[in-house]
Amino acid sequence: AKDGEHIFGATFEHNRLEDDHTINPSGHEHNWSLLPSELQNLLGPFSPHVLKGRVSFRVSARDRLPAIGRLDERRYLITALGSRGMTYGPYAGYLLACDIMGYPSFAPLDVQQSLDWQRFARRDKQQAVL
Image (cartoon, rainbow, N blue to C red; front, side):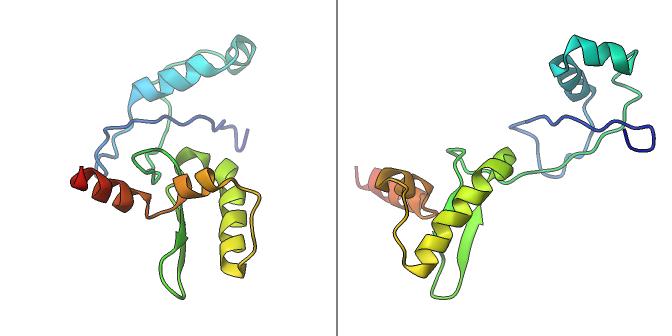
């Protein structure tokens, strides 16, 4: 606890509009339900309406995979990490560093292609042809 407050949890609300910063009590209820009962007992009575919260947004791609690659000769991109930034970030950094340095990576070609930031343009173009 910091200053007597406990901070935990995050929700994923797929259809939330980016200008909607309303704190949803059902999100608090969901997070509370994920806590082990021993921790719930330790924290005491729960009321979602008295809890504080905040709304934040994470960038994600429509296939929920990161987007990595070279934008042009001098700019590179790692984005769409969503809620998995701590997991995907180091791997994405490694792949991008290999690309920048011209080194081979241990990632299979299909993985590299599935993370390429231009994948949607290619897919959309292929579907338009079909």
